[in-house]
Image 1 (tube, rainbow, N blue to C red):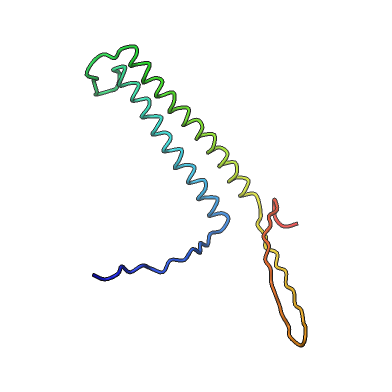
Image 2: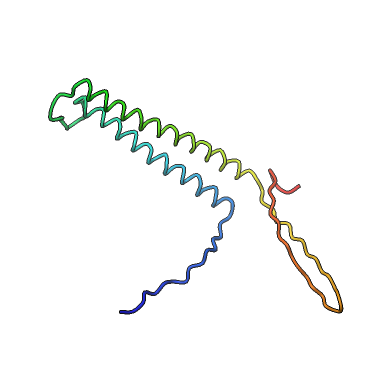
Length: 134
């Protein structure tokens, strides 16, 4: 048996600001889609227990206690959905703010000479400004 061949994987990802913003907004949209499926499932659960779900008949008429139990379950799930919605709102606002900022690079180069030896060093610093460099 031979060893598996693992491809050379690098962690370098080259995306520009517009691509990053688009990916963030797309991820928010996919999360919103997932939440809409959860909301629909909760609605169908309530419709099932009440006997109003199209094409499906429950085996027996639900008691008040069963209806209240399903209602409480749906309420708990909807609270979680609402919390997630709030986080997605913050994420969207941050993505919009990010898209308004310009990221700039500042390079500092220092050259020193001592005992006829010259040494040069570079340091990079990233900063952002709203609407471009100042």
